Image (cartoon, rainbow, N blue to C red; front, side, top):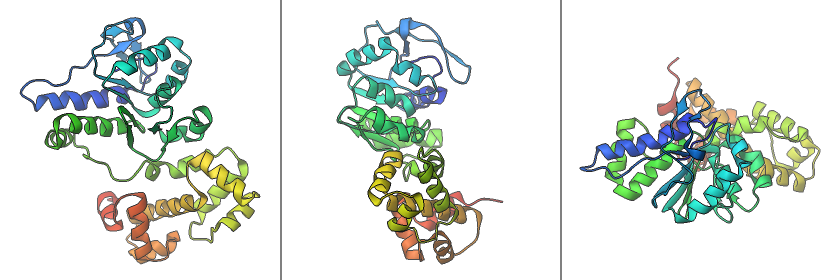
Length: 313
């Protein structure tokens, strides 16, 4: 696990705890954890806690798994030639290479994600294609695998990724035991858009697009065909489609459907409205369309979602 100043602490300790817990269910430890930093120096994480490194970048590393975490310090490290050169030299020797959260930007900067599928924290979505166009970004995924390279979305998604690695190494029974011990899902349903779409909409760079997204969020049941959206944003349909792909990684129609699903989620969490009522309020027409949309975007039925996330208030 690579350490650097202003690293996100959970990006480091989350995956490492998964591997440490897996060792407890085995007759003999399978994983050995090592932390490395530039020159082996201690680092202070984003939360203010200090982390001690076992070695520096010049250490003789065995072939194993190389992790790059994320955090506020990532952008500075993307401009650190020592770390980037280390990744370029060390990665080919490793069995697997993985990133957590915005740590995928470090792999991208080193060219290790070129022509590969990858994901990153949702807040970085507007930046990804511009900075690293050679990467096939999948911003809605919790984690991705392309060959020996794994990437994961924000923060706790590093735990999902590490569980997938444990399952590959030791089988599903051990991975399930680890998930139970840590009280987390073995496989999380849905993608990170279920947490992030309204927030991403607020960060749209084009003012017309931002106003359009705010209007969709305010009235999801309105008529949001592409022709009306392009007129509202004062853009051609082609420009509208291009901007949505650039800013959100999805078409205008899929974005609208996702916003409607987000509205329906909140209604299911906060009200006792029937599925048909929720569907009508959100613009998804009826309960059958609601079920299809939930299956596509969240991997859950509306009933399962309500039972899991219904507010106790």
